Length: 352
Ligand SMILES: NC(=O)c1ccc[n+]([C@@H]2O[C@H](COP(=O)([O-])OP(=O)(O)OC[C@H]3O[C@@H](n4cnc5c(N)ncnc54)[C@H](OP(=O)(O)O)[C@@H]3O)[C@@H](O)[C@H]2O)c1
Image (cartoon, rainbow, N blue to C red; front, side, top):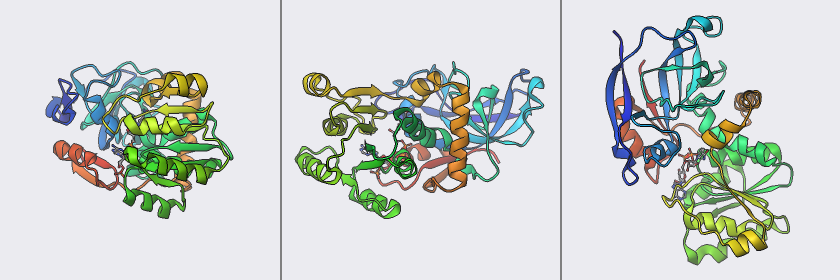
């Protein structure tokens, strides 16, 4: 009997989610259903949302659960009704909340082997490296789907926070491709300088939620943007930074709140000024809930093809992976992914 390892959790912790994970050894099923595929996982991402899932505040996780949102691997075994669709050894991207269809159960990917329905697999083009392919969904589909949903185009202005995150960096590049302008807020001077250099943009602002800096940054943004309205904003920090974004948004604009990197899950919305007088639209946005559940498979397929093409043609370039840890060193990997000075995403390397 073949066994494999998985990084699972049996309880949630809002205060110390990094402590709930444990490594367990489980049997790998040698018999699978006709519509199932066994994938040997090679590399898995460590995303902020993976730690968020262990807080119990993210939808759809039932305990016990295996951690990890997305990974790449190779096809190891194919159910009888799918033998004409997959080849043994074929490289695939896999996702805990399968991209196609409507997912029902979270199937975490921090493990050596996993049995998936075909809706969870996306074939990886030969030209795409493992490290890039493993980031397809959370870091590239998220900003791409937002751009499409907001219908951002030439001369539009999008304000974003955590602009140094991979989502933020992809958004800056999509701005150049689709013609919209990004206004980018980061918390550290070093990140601002790096983004300015790398993407040849001026509009990067350092704001870490400190009230004393609000007016200075706000004046600088107004000067830079001139008469163009800020009709769109996305915020992944929440708390006082999220509130600042809502203040900066022009009347009639829309803001998507999609993350809480500050650890503060609330934003103070003024219903008189923001909502009633200025008619600002405040929305939450989740790729796994909102987007996956409301988007037809045909559109998902079209977006994936477009993303592969942008990556193959180097129109979108992802920052290099920072550190890679063996699966058994999951705790070190999670800790490294949360370090304030981390450079690049953290990855787990599984079997092989
Ligand atoms: N709702 C959704 O559907 C969805 C989908 C994808 C991602 N997300 C969210 O989007 C965010 C970015 O994800 P990612 O995978 O792109 O992250 P990432 O590449 O791992 O980067 C996170 C970056 O955000 C910055 N950051 C961390 N804590 C911060 C804080 N308190 N204030 C301001 N900036 C902070 C840091 O940049 P510096 O070190 O340079 O300061 C850090 O490198 C996360 O909150 C994630 O949960 C949400």
